[in-house]
Each structure stands twice: as C-alpha cells, then as structure tokens.
Picture 1 (cartoon, rainbow, N blue to C red):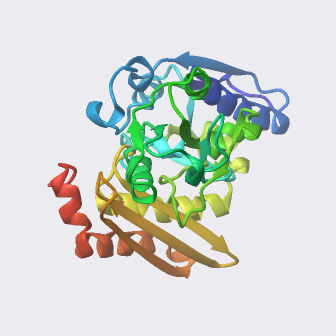
Picture 2 (cartoon, rainbow, N blue to C red):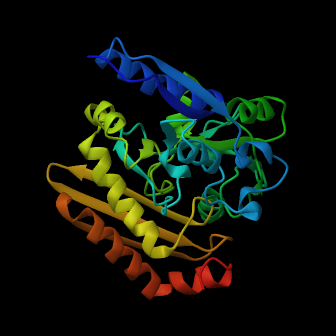
Length: 311
C-alpha cells in the first residue's frame, strides 16, 4: 500500500510522552511497514511552568493545546495523549477516534524507606501535584504533610531520592511503561484512591476530515478502553471537571456489564461524595451523565462551588 506522505506525530518531550508516541509509531509500522513516521516534539504550557501548582494555572488543556494547534495548522497529523490530561471539550475540527488498551489505572505510593502508606511516620511529607490525590490522601491519613510535586516521572523520582519527600504518589501506568515497576511500593486499590478520569489510557487525536489518518489508526482501537473512557468522560462532563480538580472516576467492565464509580471530594478530604452506577456497556455515556448528576444533587455541586470550580 502506498502512502501520500509521512505520518507526523506531535508529542511532548518527556520520557513518558515519547514512550507513548514511539509505542503508537511501532504499532502503526507493524501494520504498515512502508509507512514513514516522523515525530514532532513540542513543549506545552504544562511542561514550561514548573514552579506553580497545576491547579493555580488552570488544569484544562495544559498538556495538549500546543499539540492541538500543530494539527489545526497542518504541521502534525496526530497527537498521542494520556487521556487523563485531555479536556472534555476538544476544538471542533479535532476528535479522538482511537484509544489503546488500558494499562493499570491505579495510583501508587513510591517510597525509599517505608513499605506502605500506613507505615509512613507521623506528619510524613508526601509529594503529589494532583488535588484529587491530595484530597483522598488527606482522608486516608489526615496527619500527612502534602506538598506540591511537579515535573516528569524521572524528575519526581529524583526529588524523592534526594530526600525532599518521605514518599510520592504517581500513576502506576507511567511507572510500568517506563520500566519502573520495581519502584512501586504500594498500589492503592480503587476503593481507597479512586483514579483520575481516563488514567492509564492512551488516546490518539486527529483532524475529523482526514480519512487517510483515521483509516491508519482504526486497527488500534480497543473497545473495552473506549467504553470505560466514554463512561468516565461523560461523568466528568456533567461535573464540568478538568484534570486538576478533586474529581475521580473509574469504570470496570466484565462481559457486557460496566460498573462506574465516581467521587467528588473537598480539598481537605473531610467530605467525599461517592456514587456507583452499573449497567450495559452500550449505555456507558448515559451512565456517566446519570452518576455525575447524582453526585451534584447529593453535595458535589456545593463542594465544587465552594472551591470555584462550578458556577
């Protein structure tokens, strides 16, 4: 099969982002050996601003806007994202036609000297950049000092090794993909630490009018990850949430059934509004919207208004 041009992939320059881009490249070239693929490495606002907590500079789109602009300008054909970083609303000419199979969606604790969260000393210093993680950690251990932690995975691990933190919390998926699974001290079960919307899922974004690109990408689509993501993002859309708010959601699938758990928490972790919906996979979007409305009606709206995240 002949191809009209090389496929150009826009990606961030972190090791994890490059791993994801190379993974997609290798999957595509295995299916299309004669396809030339070029990587366009870019810095996003989230990569440039490292001295400010993400929640203070606006979490929505911080890691994707520059990549999307490259596609809109025609200098890139696709962008590869961690779906937990992708806002609910995309620019109208763009969409995400393909998501890959999900890696471990859980959060995990990494510590040099302590075997589990419960083993951390009183008032231990734990690093995380996520309001979602901070609120749930505060619920599990109210004595902890929770300090902001920015940077890529390697930078965060380096800070831990230098003794700046007693422990840090990261996504298990990123550690596993980078070959750092042996650094994981403890994986939190989703009952204790509900993951971010889309955590562990890689999505591929492209222009809606590019049939050649969509045909290339189509074989990579994973239906299980798609249905789980559909439910989680519908929940997030109803809550008007971004990727840096104390909102969590996780869908699990068994056969034709989908179970969706959702959470909105206060920043101090003292109040958590939880809910669950179960039903057919084909109803994933409706289940997400229904659960989101349930959370809003049962206290989440007040919490989100109090912290300025809902009007």
